[in-house]
Length: 385
Image 1 (cartoon, helix red, strand yellow):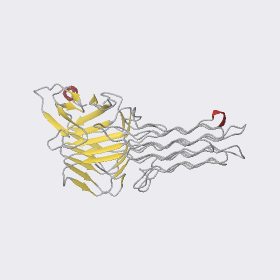
Image 2 (cartoon, rainbow, N blue to C red; image 1 turned 180 degrees about the horizontal axis):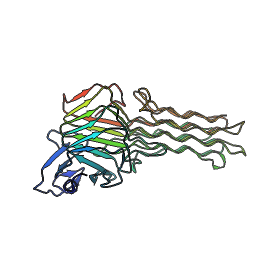
Image 3 (cartoon, helix red, strand yellow; image 1 turned 180 degrees about the vertical axis):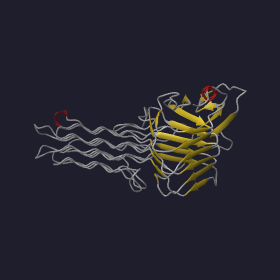
Image 4 (cartoon, rainbow, N blue to C red; image 1 turned 90 degrees about the horizontal axis):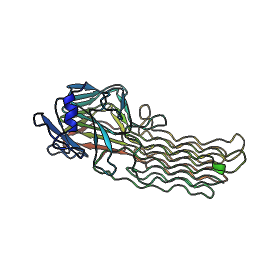
């Protein structure tokens, strides 16, 4: 268990904890990290005071909605546009092993006063998919989510979400327009997850368009001395849902949903070592396929793929969903590597159109000049700032 002193100290102190004013216990040792450190330039920064657990092993299931479970040392509020709360885990040294899954409504920040290590063979899952959302997803404020228009002769595709780039536009149906490309979202002074895709348009008799995929979650790592990154972090977005097939009385199928964007991965330390076995991914999800018009064995569209970072090959592209046959249209691929999010295919003759692919998320590495040692060739999208 982490020290109660540390929990109290993180909730009070003289500096800012991600924009939260604190009242300092003058007797406690204090150290500042990120952009609050000497010569720091990270996305965020704050100070820790009080005694911390010396060696902390991250649990295999982390729920950022829980305080002291023992996941969150503290829950603090960022002074960004939507006052996002974050879950902070702080210790002198932090090690991550195995295959931890990070979920819950708050982004997760790991802070090591000394060294933060992600061992080789470790797979950190902060991605969003149909059965679980990554930590911090969904975001309350994103760029406009552009849904596909409904149509009795076929629903249009929803657009992929926009984040670190534009999402792919949804495909058009016979008389219904697809969701237009949402714009990129600039990062403010805060940690945030990705954005969801637009919903596909309903078909005849209101058969349902595919749901937009959720954006990937957010994980930010900070260390006072160094980060040793040798494992995998996946913060990719969820694929859009497939459009329903047309009802038996005829008419058009529904449009596919747009793919969710990648989330956010941050590494912030004086020395950041990324080993050859490391993989970092914040790819967009694939758009859902459009549903079929009435025909022999007519089918719904399939959901767009999620990025298969843990067993796939670089750049781990999430493919668009398959079209429902006959006359449905395929979803667009999600962004991966240098490839931008693809638009959903348009449909004719009563099929539902495909949803657009999701945009990439952000991978941010903050370290002084000469502090980065990168041996990995599997980082997607390219890291910044």
